Amino acid sequence: MFQPMPSLCPVLSFSRMNVAYLECTRCGDHLSPDRPQSICPKDGGVLFARYDLDSLKEKFRTADLAGRVASMWRYAEVLPNVQPITLGEGFTPMLPSREFPNVFIKDEGLNPTGSFKARGMSAAVSMAKHYGLKNLAAPSAGNAGGALAAYAAAASIQAHIFMPKDVPLANRMECNFHGAHLTLVDGLISDCGRMVAERKDKEGWFDVSTLKEPHRVEGKKTMGYEIAEQLNWKLPQAIIYPTGGGVGMIGMWKAFDEMQQLGWIGSERPKMVSVQAAGCAPIVKAWEAGTSSSEMWPDASTFAAGLRVPKAYGDYLILDIIKKSRGIAVASTDEEILQATRHWASVEGVFAAPEGAASLVAYRKLRASNFLSADDTVVLFNTGSAYKYLDLLEAKKIEAHNIEENKAQSTPPASRNIGGIIGPY
Image (tube, rainbow, N blue to C red):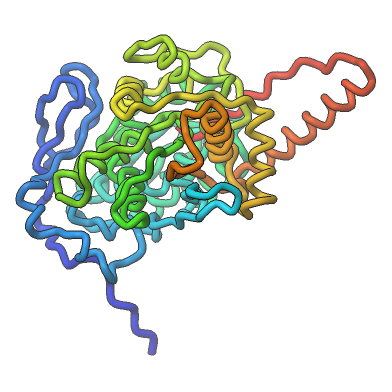
């Protein structure tokens, strides 16, 4: 008779929440974690879950992680103390680069549903189940929607997902097969977000859009804990992160502060590098202009679907992190990203999502400019699997071939906007 494996998660009581309060990242106000919260009612600021780390410091040490389950829930003491809805997300490999000494590739494409979005949705849906929510809604045109559909199915919760009608096939199929209510919209991700906002109260949906609830950050912050643990509790000199909504960067920065309070690391911090597509680079533009928030990027266009976010809701947090870490924001062209996707696949054996491959482009540029040296330990994030993007990659390959043919015939190529597909939000 089959005997299930014992859980390697810490034995925790789920009788009460371990989150002390939710804190607004703008005004600092505290809100109760005992009921569902969205954003700060005063100023719309992003909410962070806060824990009593001082008391936890004496009870939770790095040695306690030995033998625990290889998922993000190994860090249960610094995650909401609820029964997790898990598909085995997290603790993805840190692959040493075969090309560059001191460089590691953090491969998030090996998560359930094929991207780092699984982390955030595991935490958000776990909390939704804890709160007794029955219907969740989100705008998406990619991996976030697929992840929400999967975790909502595992939790027996209804998911309502709004996507532009020209989304990648894999993401649309994920939503359908997981039983989500999928609405295809003749518009962009902003139109989808507006529809969710207009209907959520009437329909009784809880909005789990990017940074519109506090727990997707909690799931994604575990990437920061993993980097530290996998590098033996010594942070790298730099982290290069593909930035659309930027929740991964925001979450990791939060994790570093928590680990310092726990006594696991010191005050050192990696340079946080935001990489965006040249056709949609609001963070890069704001960084170069020295502003504390970004402007809406007009006519955003890139085949790196997850980077096509014209304005991140947490832009003020992203820009502050780059500044505090002495980091930088870098743009990559679609041509550079496509070449890097091929290069990583052929040299590293990593079939990266276009967004992830953009981190290689940024690393090369920063080495060339001497912002980074060969001796610096650097982590490059691949945020998803290229298997989710096969139709985009094929279309881009055909387009590049046609352009080359046109050049050979001395005929100007036909103009085409390749940004019709909008990625994870």
